Length: 82
Image 1 (cartoon, rainbow, N blue to C red):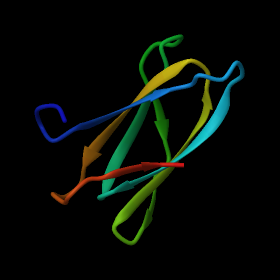
Image 2: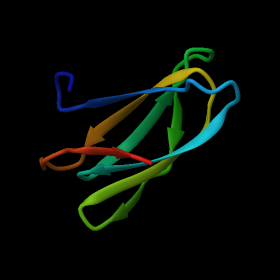
Image 3: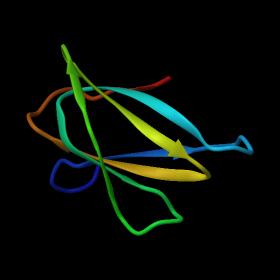
Image 4: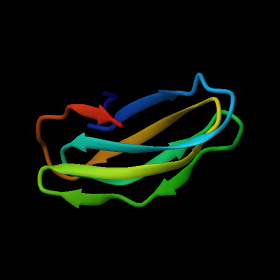
């Protein structure tokens, strides 16, 4: 967690090919921005709220990337990556 309530989720791809990653994070977040190391910051991702969780898809994780999550309201946050 960084100052201002923003959370950062770091993703690493150990495979030899890019793939999409579906993420489910406990809490309500918007906006969501994705920063891959091979591009300038940032690509906006579209969140979906499902109860107490925010879901989004990183469309093409090549090597690694960071996802920046901004809180819409204070809640407990636990990450579950599928």
